[in-house]
Image (cartoon, rainbow, N blue to C red):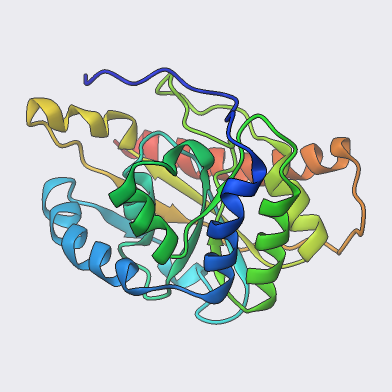
Length: 233
C-alpha cells in the first residue's frame, strides 16, 4: 500500500491567513468545482467502480450535512459522485498551501478548519452556509482513520447537529481504506450508502459532553451502515 504521510495535528499558521478562504466559501462555489467534477467523475466510476445505495435519502433541497467515515482523500469524490447537489467541504487546514490545489479549494467552495486550534471561524462558516441552504460534508471522525478500521467520532458533528437543527445524513464509505492501492494499479471497489436523515432539537450552547453524545449517536448509524456493507463483501 502507498506511503501515508504522518499526520500534522497543529497548523502553525495564524488564523488571519485562513480568513480569505472562509470569505470565499461564504460567497458561493466557483468554476473549479465543476471542472474537478468533470475531470474526476469518469475515473472514479470506472476505476473504483463506485456504487451508491440510498441516494434517495439525501434531501434535494434545503440545508443539510453529510456525515461520513473517512479513510481516503478520494472520499470527497466518492461521496459526491452520485449527488446532483454541490457539496461544501470542511477540510483540514493543512490542505491549504500548495498554490494550484489552494486555488481549486478556494474557488470550489472548500473551507478550512484550523487543526489543533479552537477554530470558531470554521463553525461560523458552517452556520452561514447552512443558512444559505447549502449541503455540507463534515467527517464524523474529524480526520482520516489510518488503521483501516473505523475511528471514533469527534464532537464537531454533534455540535453542528445541535446548534443548527438541520438534517444530518449518516454516510458509510466502504472500500476506500484500500484506495491508495492505485499506486500498485489495484483499484478496490467502493460502495457508498446514505442513511436516513436524523435531526435534533436546537440547543443554543450544548456542552462538549452533549456534543460528543450526539456525535456518537450519529456515528453509530454510520457504523451500522458500514458493518452492513462489510457483511455483503
